[in-house]
Every structure is written in C-alpha cells, then in structure tokens.
Length: 390
Image (tube, rainbow, N blue to C red; front, side, top):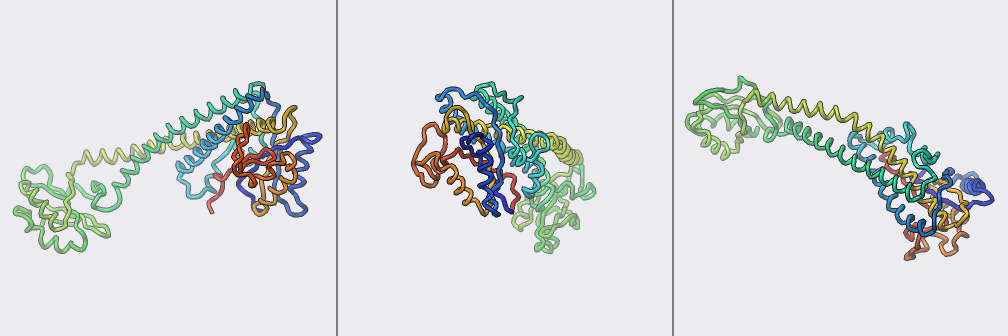
C-alpha cells in the first residue's frame, strides 16, 4: 500500500457530535474492500474566538506565518542533511524527530495541543505572535550557526584541496624532503619544476643548457602523478629569472616554492587545527539542528491548528462545532478520495463543488487561492522532506 507523503488537514461541521463527523469520514475512506486513505482525528482545543474582524485579519496573517514556518522547518531539515553529508534522504529521515524521539508523521497523526507552551486562554493573535517570534529566533540562530560552520568547513576543504589534485596547483610541501634542496647557500638555489610526462625526456636532455650556471646532473624526479613529474634542479641565484623564462618557453613550469620547515609545519598545524575544530563543532551543531527541527515542526503544526480553527469559525459560524481531521490518501486512490470529500461536504458550499471549477474567484476573509478552495476547510501538509530519494 503506497501512501502519499502529503496529508490533507480538513475540517467539517459537527454532526450531532464532532465524533460522528469523524466516524462518517473514516467509513467513507474505506470504500468497501478498497481503502482510499488513512484518517486521523486532529484535536484542537477550545480556543478564544474573538471578533469577526480579528478572525478575518488573523486569517491573512496566519497564511504568511504558515508559509514562513514551513520554510524554516525545511531549512532545518536540509541543513541537517548537508551537515551530516548524507547521500540519501532515507538516512535523513532517521535523524528527524519531534518532541524527543517521535517521527514527524506520528506527531502529526497524534497531534495534541501544547497547553503549557501555548495557553488556550490567550487570544489567537497572541498565540500566533509567540509562535512567529519563536520560529524567527530559530531561523536567525540557524543562519548564524550554519554560516560559522560552513566558513570553517570551506577553509578546511580549501586546505585539503591544496593537498591533492594536480602538481600544477597542489601544495607540494609534503612531497619533498629537506635533502632535496640546497639550503642557506649564498650562491645556489634549488628550484621545483613541474614537467609534463610527455616532455620528461626533453627536460633531462636540455635543462643544463637552458641557461648558463645550471649545476650539472642536479635534476632528479622527487614525485610524479599520472600526468606530471615533479623535479628539482639547482642553479646559481643570479640566473633565476632567465632560467624561469626559458622553462616557460619550453612548457616547463617552475613552482614558486621555498623549502622552509617552519612554514611547512605551520601549514600542517593549521590543517590539523581546522580539522579538530570542525569535529568539535559538528556534534553540538547536529544536536542543535535536531532539537530545533523538532521545535520548528511543533510550531508549524500549531500554526496549522490555528488556521483550521480560524477558517472553520469563519466558514461554519458560531457556536464552535467542527471536527478537524487528517486524511492521508493512498497514492493510487488520490483522486477518488477527493471525490469522496466532495460528496460528503459539497453541500456546505454549492458555489464551489471543487477547487478545479474555480479559476479567478477571490474569497474575502478566506486566505486561499482559488485552486485550493473547497467546500470544506482544506490545508495540505507536505512531508516530502522525509521521503527517500527514488
């Protein structure tokens, strides 16, 4: 049974009781032996309604907060994936948890309003503002922490790249030895030259004649890769510029390198330091991302609950009597389940039997695009960030 990664968060007016509304939906979703969807109750407590004007204004703002909160949830998820350097989302899913060790799908399916964090006696606007402020703080902190870690990671990668790759560009300090060089000589200097392998024979035949005062038989290969040889050659200091020019004319590349044990050691120390610092920051950052993905996800679901409550009151009126429900369609029965919902609730708004029939209508006070407008309150909750890559 293949389920969609999205849930439909809907509400409909209560029958004699809200429970009967849910039972009716659950029965319709079974459709004989062919199950169309999984259904769950989405419990929303009795919140403070306020005035109609407040609800209409809040409805618009909640749409923006919803989109913003979802973006932070996704940003936390993608950042964790990047920091963990995961190759498949299946591995990411194992690391995304809510309220301790609860998978996001299970938290959504068993949603329960956090009364301690968001007291129901507060006005709806106050609750929305608290959630928005909390999510904004998570986003700011995420940017700061991730940027610092990324800068560190970038510096480390830059040093690591210099330690590998082509002899034309890589750091050659770890490829040569002290005995390969004439050091502390007033007259002589040892140069490092990169020779294309196809020109290796030419080099050894001609290097002594590229300029005067080249020390005979001083060149030797100290390292090679599939394309180049790294050779040293000793010359008199006075002919350095002339020798380098002659090398360039013959497609031999003289690397700008001086053997200095202190600098070489400092480079190795810097690499070790950055590597250790990255490891030191990795654990706390992963822990913070996991915790705050969960916090952002909880905030997102509470915003969804606020939207359902607000829209349900605007749609169905007072006294408050509706049932919020989650529908998770079976992939192959996606369209059939939409038809079932229209059959159940189409009478609630005869002007909109389906969102597809509406192209340009704007609905004042109902913060939905035309294609998302249905006779019943409807919000899509997409958890595709949890889906394995196929």
